[in-house]
Image (cartoon, rainbow, N blue to C red; front, side, top):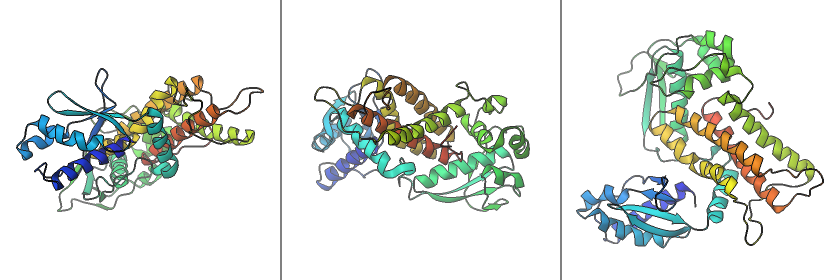
Length: 360
């Protein structure tokens, strides 16, 4: 069960409770679940009982008890606990089962993994100044919104800079339209699109413009072109290229990815794989949060974390056999995890408008 699956499961439990007249409250459009913080109980937690307590005219603990019984009966949920004033804490079934579901979702959805329809009822008009960082940010936010089912368009205060096209920016209209607007106004870049393209090229320029939060100044120096670990963009793209190289290497050795656990006591989901698997599972939630908060920088930081975890995983669980070693079930499983990481990296870069080369 993925975090998105769990969110839908909790929402379904709320609907059931309302339909059965056990709970008299409006059904929310969505339910948010978050990974439990260190020291907390279970794998995920949810505050929906506190959210519904007022409308239901019931104590939050009573609402939590009503929902606990319904969620606990769902497949994939191992245990549901009530903590604090009414938080629901969920422990999923055996991690291997949940992890396989995540890897299967990545394989099935490909670059669209993490896309959804949570914002399908929303229409946005993103309006920005005639400034390169505002234009690139608005375009990235628009991509994130569309990936979550929203509709809309981008408009600029004045006629767009012709160089924006080379940065992948399109503007639907310019001027000040008489409709409600969402203003996109990050700290200006301090350079024009033409200057950034000449110094950095489109990919590094976009990363530099989007990596910092909108209220922070963007780092747009020559460090964005360094081919080394100190450059986050290089590290992200190198992790993607390495994941793709592993697939090619496995094919040359005559085997493919398979996330099926190996052995009776040991599973593919070794301790070393846990941080990477958790980040892959959290990816849909990060994309949705980036869209809701108009914050493509969240996606960039997520990709950095995935790349870092990928290399740690790769060093501990090499997907390709060494020397005369024969490919084993472990190698096939580790390859499945590596391929999923590469897909997440490529999909995230695509939403930021940045290429993910197969070779570096």
